Amino acid sequence: MPSLASILIVDDDANICRTLSEILEKKGYVTTAVDSGHRAIELSKEKPFDVILMDIKMPVMGGVEACKKIRQIRPSAAVVFMTAYAPEDLVSDMVGESGYMLIKKPYDIDNVISVIEKYGGKGLAVTLVDADITLRNTMQNGLKGRGYSITVCKSGEEAIALAKAKPRDIFFLDTELPILSALETYLEIRKANPKAVVVLMTAHRQKTEEMVRQTIEKGAYSCLYKPFDMDEAVEIIEKIIEKKEKGRAG
Image 1 (tube, rainbow, N blue to C red):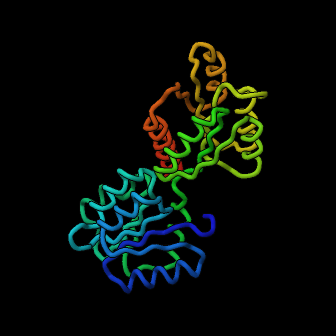
Image 2: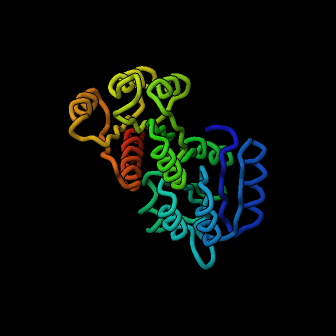
């Protein structure tokens, strides 16, 4: 977990909000505290939070209902339910899904921090590799708006350098890059970052068919064909999150 991760605390008990905020901020986290599910939903529209600590029992709108609405806005939000009671049926249905956890009150702060470190960080770190600045900007804005950590590169060389410098989870890799081919770039990324998942992108299905086939045979995840809807990219990311979570659980 990087320093200064942002935490949204949602609890109608002002003392709990204040105590959690003080402890977490001393440890380097940035916290925002609100006393209702409605306010948490409004804040989630304005900005993505790395982790949401959500009380279950609140007046007007409970934590489970609020989280369902937040996940419609921020599909990758990491949500930690907090409760002094045994999980209700609704909570039991949600806990165990990607991005949901449950902590019983009174909680151990070390346990809270452990959960934050494990599940925080907007799910996955995503890198966009494309020479087209318009597409880069469109995807960057679209994915950032959905709560993902985004880095953009305009060439295969930049992407390889990034992979060597810092592990990334997903690369969206255009098939038509200057100098290095997508296949060459893919192989170098995987050499530097073996756990990275690479999704190809192309506007020319027939022209790049053979390269796409070869790269997928080498282990690339799939290919998006331009122009594609942003929801298609998000769906792929969510599937990768689900796969990673199942692998971690298994």
